[in-house]
Length: 403
Image (tube, rainbow, N blue to C red):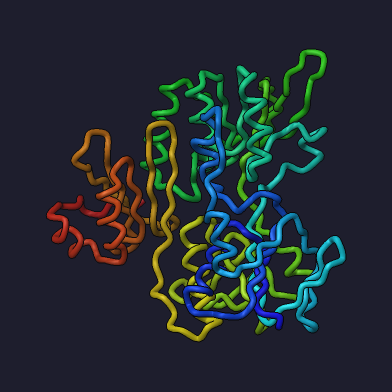
């Protein structure tokens, strides 16, 4: 009896196994992972884990969970090939895993600088627990750090390094920080806070080379314009690339992620994909979207479990994201791209506020700073038009001034 094979045991892979059992699936479930540790929470790696001396990753589920739910967790095994016709996966060690249904949950890996730029593989990346250990060892002895990439992860690492008293320079190729994920007003607010703590920033700057100067034992980062910055350590956080090679080699449709339907089904009728490696069709937007966050991955896992067991699909929830930068907690929901108006709503606590993003008079995104209760309330209002929202919140919005 083949049952269900899940490749990848991070958030969405483990969630898929759990959701299948909740949906009363009683066949065999095999969960295969390359890592040799029990599945753990990844987001804290760029947040509190870096600042703590002792850090043991929080397990996604206790060890007993797998046995008590009859989930066969296979660790330290790398799957290298899929055979869709025969319905089996081959591991590097030669083992074959056959399946009736396959769920791909391999996640993503950090986008890397090309070897021509990172001469001698000097830069550090952060994705796994091993990466964390290597980075912490270097940071503890460092006085200065250059961070390439001003997105959420880059800024989380920057905030921690600043708090440790390091000299921190962030290099961002785009015109502003966190452009893909954060509204303009919140990005500006965060930048001000970090600048007050001594952050150095280079916007609109590309990195032309990273190399180690052994004589002076420093890393040298050269920018496109010729400027050179020295640091004890260089960390690169320029986004994540989905693990899609297995799927592509097997002939599945792939385009910045494994393309799946709104029920998570790939171009093969027996193969589903969830989490960071998957791009889900969004009927409202009419295109595929790849969500890099825990929360949508867990929702996708429930949808796939329902699709496989033939139970009713759960209602679709808007993805929520969060980020900790120093003492600032940022919560986000909705799509900040394509906003044509922003309004700021102050929260009762001092220094706490929300930014509402509108597109043609409809609320499409909410981002809050240190206002978790306000976030919970506003998150549920996404989709409302400006007039109804103003009435519901008992506030007045300024007349639209379009960007």
